[in-house]
Image (tube, rainbow, N blue to C red; front, side, top):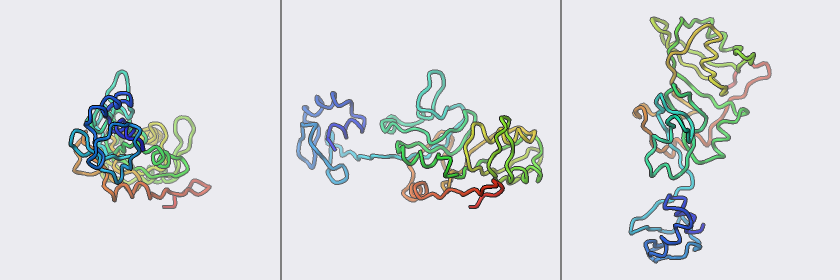
Length: 250
């Protein structure tokens, strides 16, 4: 990799700006001053310092964010705040994006990364990666609802959802539930309950695949995934649906 490309990717400026920066002699590779941005380096083995401080190059980064309400799952917006606004400047330089989306009024687990290949595989409709939610429901959730979700319900546009696993945590005074779905249609959880004459009043995603939201993360906080968590994402196994759409084989 070219030295100027690495420095630009790390947020030290554009390649043009790097040219002036390098000429100042502030960059060393293996303790030798390097002023040529075209110099080839191995970021995994070479020791690179800027103004005496060693920098760690990362091609891909993976953040777990506990998304609060009021933020859009987008990289930029002219009117509203986005989840990128929650990142520190030193993490924004990686130009990450949210894997999928959570509604503006929905909380919970959101993965931010610059690994486009992984994001595509996690979101592929063919993979059926499970997503689990905790919700408060206006209207009593019954075993009849559990059975209906297990078969798949018809949304307002006529689409029949894949089978979903609905568990009732508490039924009074407010129904509290856990729901695992295997697809990601627009406003899907809200529309599924609407099809049963009920309204979601609070929604939080607690898991995506085998990755669960860190309970120690407060709303708006984030951290890098651990090696074990990254492996859970990369080695995830989706769910195969049978042709009748009646069951989900985990």
